[in-house]
Image (cartoon, rainbow, N blue to C red; front, side, top):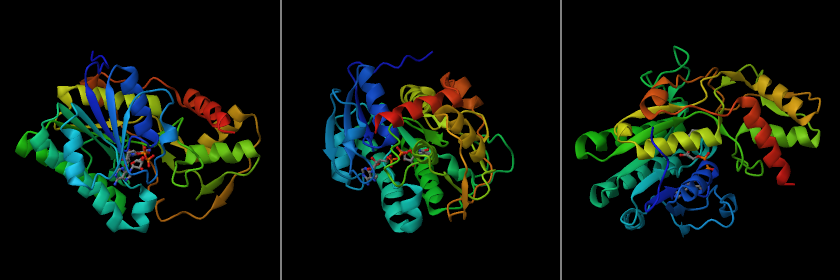
Length: 317
Ligand SMILES: NC(=O)c1ccc[n+]([C@@H]2O[C@H](COP(=O)([O-])OP(=O)(O)OC[C@H]3O[C@@H](n4cnc5c(N)ncnc54)[C@H](O)[C@@H]3O)[C@@H](O)[C@H]2O)c1
């Protein structure tokens, strides 16, 4: 069993002011590590990082090679999360290409010189498209329906190539619909759960794109952080990809029903048109590889995760 302990180690977290990154910063710091955050604050906000915890913040971009190399020279581990999200990427694929592919290549190029203990690259279950078989295993053939999934997969492919060619110790995690505290509904690019909670709490109708029967594998943030850090600390992650999900398939309508129950409010949904990014019908991940190789197990049930998220959203008022 790997113990999450970063005592005496420095972890560079790119995108550390974002939703997942800020939660990772908190967990690494509480586990004894020093953290350097590199973020251009495009969607991130330093308010996401818990007050009172020590970290070094560098405002800058992963597309700046010299900056990346300098920070990596001072780091033992790298959690590479900085990315343009699917909405930005769909509007501007070139911007996505520069950050998501160019930024990842910079991290890997710098690793050849600075020799970190390990890098974890955060990829996305969106690379599976509409899969042939559910639950989806890591070896499923990728189908890239969006510029975002193209760039996330390209980043992965660079990771495998740098592991094979230059022996850069890098592992990949594929996240599926992470939700939880710090996913601020005020951020227009944030996930569906925070937006639903905001509408339900205000007594408004949550807007559902399409019929609501589309399914996803919703993963609580603490479980995603744990899986990411186990990959960061494990030599068994090198050159490998791991699904990070709950292993359960849930429809959007089910999410609304559970939230309505937790919030104690009756909800009438408003169905609106599907967006150009809503082209995946069903998703649920097979998480056996992550369980067996990293000894990782999601701990938080959907209902409990949603309850904690509602509680957090209430603190924002
Ligand atoms: N949230 C999810 O459900 C999910 C699912 C699959 C994959 N991911 C991946 O996880 C990572 C983190 O996602 P998130 O949900 O926390 O998103 P987020 O938008 O909250 O965080 C991304 C962070 O990266 C920063 N950033 C963007 N471009 C940058 C650049 N050029 N240089 C430095 N920093 C930059 C942003 O300011 C932000 O703080 C991303 O790589 C994303 O592709 C997330």
